[in-house]
Image 1 (cartoon, helix red, strand yellow):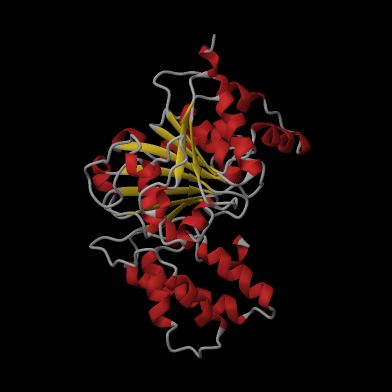
Image 2 (cartoon, rainbow, N blue to C red):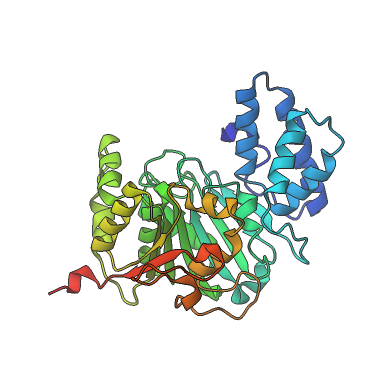
Length: 356
């Protein structure tokens, strides 16, 4: 439903022609205009979901304040109240994320581009719903904007990014190479690709192709399923298979995260681990595909993100990437210490290409 908020999310939305407050006010007016045209609940839902896929934490707070005077039964009031209450931290920070559309399928969230040397760059590969398993401001709210830049990619063709990204290129390799011309990866302290569901395998591919430090794939699809999807659309999986089989040095750290009680996702993780050197982190107690949503519902999204990123979300000094004892459940299956997000199991696997 991108067309429903095309003006709100247009490229260059955070240019220097207006202040952040003016841009947020413009976004609010556009939102009001869009929902005034809705005649059904489905239309309202589509607009709200599309807006959730783009807005920043600061915009959520601005919308929440502006819509507070609406009647309690107002769809806009109910929507923004739910969205605001779901913010994991809801912290007003000295600097805030602002968004800028690089092209139709690419949104850059940054607070201060000049301080990239102190930041981690996260390149997010969204799934078919064009989000990282939840509203974008909920994810951004977990990150200190002084220490993180986030670039979200969206695959409107829904073919695992194999047909590229409009404005960047018509295939995966071309689009990612062109993305590199917009982002100086070398200016950042480190760079991580982060993909959910249908964006999981592309996140791994991107880390290999762009020589990133790390790839995180949450509930990724099994490669055979990705290949079948490409085949149904007349696309070849050869480039993807070759990239997964390559072993450039240094090779990025790869972490695959899945629900321990979700059979299909467990099988997909094991299959991917046979194709590429990776650790598999199993979230015990979680039976659903939407692992990040499960962590959010349990109030543990920020510490879980810190765990899988391997560093603090708030402080410049990175945490160790090794899994601390408090996070790991041993093979004995004994209970893990609190917090409950610690109910995970980590399974390293040697490089299958080096197996005897």
